[in-house]
Length: 167
Image 1 (tube, rainbow, N blue to C red):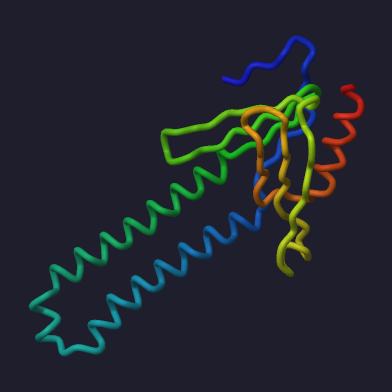
Image 2 (cartoon, one colour; image 1 turned 60 degrees about the horizontal axis):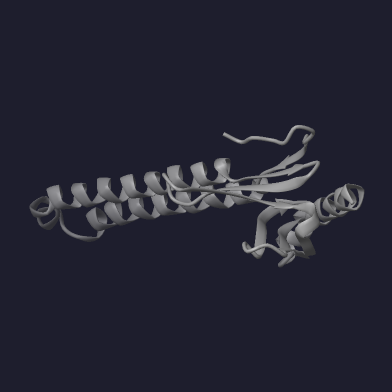
């Protein structure tokens, strides 16, 4: 559970851009289509007698690959949904899921922020205005990354504004 200080208020909450979700779903649809193509392509290419000998192995492989594709989708959707970056009136809180049962929660006070850098790579990222926000801190954690965040320059401006008000 996240605990805030006595006078601390949540200013904004950020998640990854929706295009990251689109890429996750697109990759899964492509993998499932490839799995179906491999199964039914094998039946079409080879004679029916050869396929009948290996039918149980082909079905087992098909369902295992399909299960792995859906499991990968579940893991990626869970990671997408549970990665949260919170800007409060006193600090920034990073909540990231690493695997299903490992979650890292870290924070950095505004007084410890030394540098903020935005990185927008590629034509799609430029067109849709998403990218990475890199925050360098004076603490032991060093570097914090907001990956695939919407409007990174606006988020940077908000953080700098709150940082200047915090002093």
